[in-house]
Length: 268
Image (cartoon, rainbow, N blue to C red; front, side, top):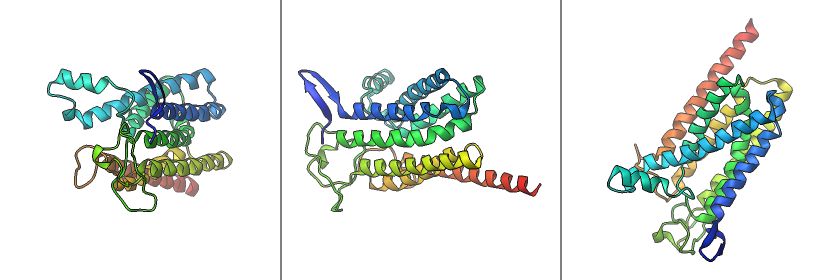
């Protein structure tokens, strides 16, 4: 597609980077406009977002390095250097999500902020930002799909794209757009759930838990159509599918205990 937004001599601006940055900014703006729901200052929201974004970038790169560690070189120094030398590409979304969530939780505990309440507001923002970022993946050619004759198939003809050289000019699944569409749908679902939760005083964490369940299901399914390298498979499942199953199980357990607690309170 269009890996670079524009080039001037040796200077180039990757389309992927611009759209990922736009996704981060749009998600941050969504949260920032709703800080009143948390009863915390805008300065604290800014601090949380800064920690979250930095942690997401580091976590995403760390997970990618772990998954593809053997491909980075022969010695430990060589592998570490190759893993860190390029922050334009090579991130694992789940790695960023997990490390960011842990970082925000630690900050929330120290600052006496309700983590689950913040997570409920952050969940739609994450889905929205991710939807924009996946469009960047599409322009770059990363996270691409398998060959197919499906009506939605696309061809990547630009040799600078990150599609496997063997698939240049071959119709493949636009898995980046599948993921973007899924995240947009999740965003709209969670956005309206958040509005409903304010009217009906829902239990904190239900919006975030819904995000975890919905995204885990979507990611698990889309992985079947992916054609890029995603690490070693376990029981015919990619690392992301293993994490998706774990995320869905955690989400269902949260729903189960939250529902049982609600029923118990009503009986009392």
